[in-house]
Length: 367
Image (cartoon, rainbow, N blue to C red; front, side, top):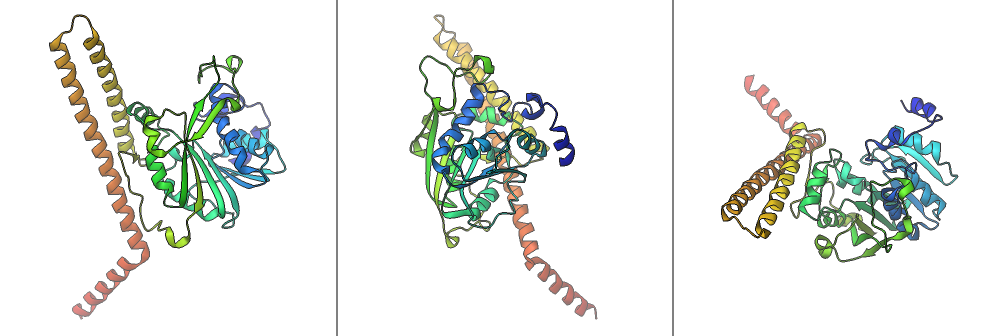
């Protein structure tokens, strides 16, 4: 498969070939959206000077090449898609850069404590178990290393609904939940807002490269307390994590991640959970529409109390349905956690030893 794709890579690639329906950004289409993503690599330049870097989830490869060209000693780019890796190798050849096909939950081939900086932008929302990746990252980082991650900023019901509607997004987590997960492996975590600052220009992520009048330096990434995240609009939820914890402080994988708010993970490949999530997204969209109708009716010169009462009842019913769906998704996650715990017990051998002992007793009784 990889060889076939690499052979085809010598032909002309199109944006459609590599964008995966718009989920993957490429340098072939440098519009506002592209430069917004590239600005995160621009921010990372300060941390990668003369450093060994791991770009975890390198996508179409432009960002890894950017870091290799702007001061990194060496960039290891890993990506689960063979097609994206072939595309990256075709377009970006640097002596201090390599691309490999690799699952972020099964990172291999690197010595422990061999990486200075781990970078991951708009990737971790896609993987079934972010904690497994964070554990690998913690093992790979040097004691003075750091990790920079960017994920969708789910700080409102609208953004939650938007991410639920994206079939690729499995981890519907708030910035506070990401901060909580990172704290299992790092003693120092700084949250950053990601904003745009160029007077006279309004960002348009759907515009064309010909219409674009921005570049990666026009964006502002600045630290703020994570407690302010829910009230601070941002393009990305961005974290810089330092001071990897010592081995005696890290309890993963024995201790599962706890959810501290209404964040949740959609089980990968579970059609029931995905269907419930799609229903939840639709219900939240309908709720926003009803709320907009209520606001319009309330501001009308001729207020109709009966219509307002009817809309309020519809909102209450929608909220109840949303709560039911959220509870159902949470119950499925809890059930999966129980099954995983049972599997771990079986694999540890305790259950099997007990079964063997019972079997031996039965044989003695039968004699």
